[in-house]
Image (cartoon, rainbow, N blue to C red; front, side, top):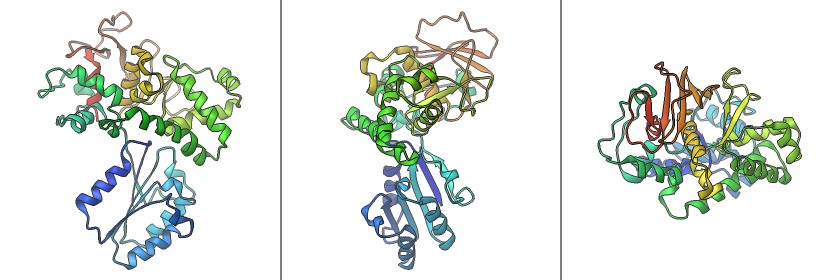
Length: 357
């Protein structure tokens, strides 16, 4: 049993449908969406039973978070049909490991991110670029032999490259719909929130989008949107898990301590451009990109002297004219610059950090 979770729009459904088409025999593979009306009368376990009796081998269940009591049903399917291969997808707001039934010993869970800059180069432009480790990036070992000028491609990525559907037309409309559905459907359904709360979530996202970046004053925000201070912590966490925001936590309090949030960014630069448009602050765009790309494989926390810290390495992110005044030349501190094609010494190009996954 495999689980694939991720934010809306990152390509979970498309990926499993492509896998079925390219690798499996349609006679023994079945794809179903858990939000289909069919499941208002039929249980998942009964479908699995019928499918298995008819020589089914591969069962793919999409949008599992739309099915009531999903975790118990998956557990029963796993235990009842040991020869059946099951793959399910779910919203990233769903806490798979804390479902009512224990899936942690049964399912291997993968978290599907949006496209990195490297994956965008492959998917949109068919450039085959290798993954570079953080150590290789800070050593200026990144090579793009196929690409003479990466900056125009990088600028395009910032606006439309994080989501696979960006390759198609009407990117802004589709991303806008994803944001609305996440706020109005996914989060309220998961957290048992009412319609009025979804309006407060929209207001909260708007406040974050208009700030550069957002340094939360929780008491003041709670007063503005008329919620309790404790509820606000939950709202931020739901929005983070749903792929709408990223919370940069304080370096002294540990990355997983929820209450110690230093700054809040929108999750990725495509969302920034969708919500703010051409009024987007360049500095905010740069930091959003760095945080979004690096936190996939690295523990990114805030810095007292610069912007980010990763494993005792300090990074100050800015434009091509960024000075090094607050950065020590100690081998552990780096200036990350936008609009430069190549790095030198402790100065690194911003786009290179998009090759880490």
